[in-house]
Image 1 (spheres, rainbow, N blue to C red):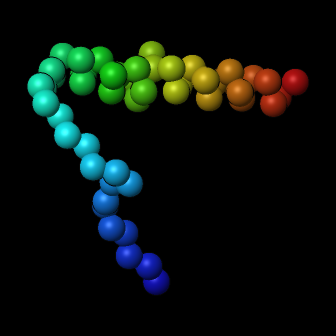
Image 2 (image 1 turned 45 degrees about the horizontal axis):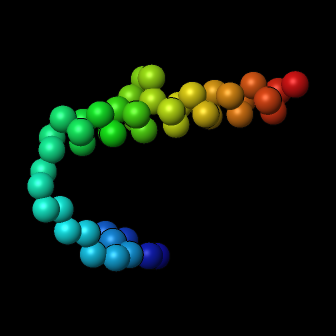
Length: 49
């Protein structure tokens, strides 16, 4: 039906790698206490009432 090409919209060049910062950023988006999870929970509560 369709194909998925994993390509970025613009090139990304990383000059210095910081694994601790990368781990922190990923945990904020997808971890159990991440902001994305908190936002979706807040939106669920708003749509119920």
